[in-house]
Amino acid sequence: MNEWLLSIAGTPEGARLATILALTAALAHAIFGALQKGLHDPWLTRGAIDFWLVMIAGPVALFYFGPPAPFMWPVLVGVVVIHFLYKLAMALAYERAAFTVVYPVVRGTGPLITIFAAMIIFGERYTALQWLGVACLSGGILLLALRNLSEEQIDLRALKIGLVWALVGGVTVALYTTYDAWAIRLSGDPLGFVAWFFFLSSIDFAILAALRYRRMAYPPDLRPLMLRGFAGALIGYVSFGSVMVATLIGKVGEAAILRETSTVFAALIGWFILKERVGPRKLALMVMIALGAMIVEFGR
Image: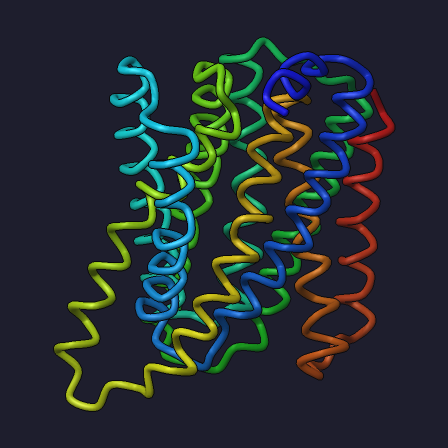
């Protein structure tokens, strides 16, 4: 499998598969976000997910793929640090502001920064039509965040702090997307890298959540929390694993943009499954986001 993935990198076949994987990652990430919404403390939810990621990825990384090459250990340390910062920013943002406000801010700022980083680091180039698509998609996402923000009736100070952390989250999304794309290409063993990524980058929040749970005066029932964590871990493999492989075989910037159609999927999940109200303005913004993604994909 590794040899085949490396052989189609940068080819038209690779670009087509990268598109499918990025859209798959978008749908999975929307489900991943909806799964974390509301029922539990965001620190505990993320910790439960990471616990299962460690439990599942650990044996695969250790006994199937074996230790990574020595030169990859410092790279993997960087992966752990960057993803810890991302998860920290997201937990702090969700702690203070609503999911419908935080999620679009994070997803709207991330791809803009990723596009510029991919141009500098990987030498990627985009047409004027694709830049129009980027503006359409990110603009639609950020306008959706503003629309959701206008409907919020919570403490203004907490909301401002939540938005700051959401912006930090967007920056770390761009950082980890670019860094992971560089690291998986450097590794020469894409699937082995993905296994070690999930194993090593999930230990931190599993420990933090366990400590937080023990300190709680009234901790929640562990069984539903762990069931939700197990489901989140399985979805997380699809979400993060798919986009990593997409950045290996296709353009990093395009994969980042297409992944952010997760905002549309999240809104549709909220509309049809969570029974949240979606008015004509939100519907128009969802169309704008989807149109932006299509322009990026077909405006090459």
